[in-house]
Length: 120
Image 1 (cartoon, rainbow, N blue to C red):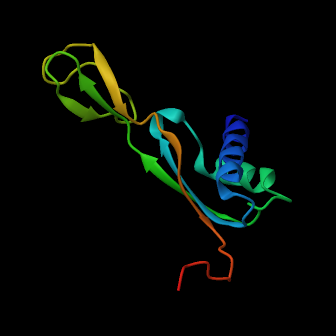
Image 2 (cartoon, helix red, strand yellow):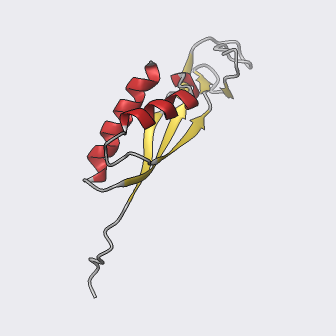
């Protein structure tokens, strides 16, 4: 059900920025630490966009690996399946997440009017 609230939030953001234009594609950046299941998000996205200008839009999901940085020695590493929050170089356990927490609408593609509004 987590993905339902994510899909609803994405729809709200996209509708705000589409300015009443038909949306053709939505690109999301989703960090591994967000624990979003891509197929589940796609299912709920299709469900919440029904009867909106976003219905039928292609949903592209860019996965962002989780990365952390040691506060002691500044070593950076990618978290694997079993997260290790202790620095592999100096064994300090004070780390900062530098990537993998993202949940962003990176871009939307909208249908443009066929009428050219550029100056001639």
